[in-house]
Image (tube, rainbow, N blue to C red):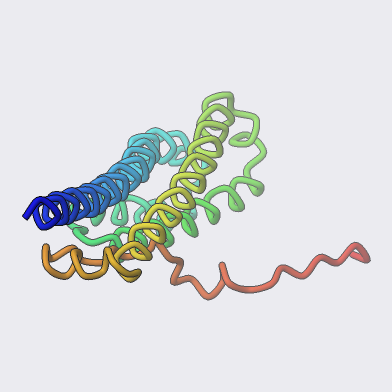
Length: 183
């Protein structure tokens, strides 16, 4: 009788420990996503300032500025990690275009406001990159936990679902960069 009671107590403790480890892993994923969200929001908060600074100089590139504004507006309607990742990739490409176009405007390049915004965006992009990597590492650990024995049993019983990785959909981002020093 005592042995049966000890076995039951051990099983209950194991179930509680496994369940709690799944909850902790899921919370880490949510926190990691929140960190990406915070950095993306910071970038979106910087964009109106960048657009206003650039608008006076870039008279011929209104389409690029409109695209940035539209992408920023679309952000609030995106619900899933995939949707936000797609918008993030599109916005990154558009911001690269603005930075490249700024080369054609010496007065803009010399503007202190533009330089400061450019530096803030660069720092934010670095933070976003780190946050994406951290998020994907956390999601991978969580999803692995959902698939390995014995936690996979409890994950299915308690309806834990795998999370989506933050991926790039840009073919340009997947291309190898050709470096040519002969030019």
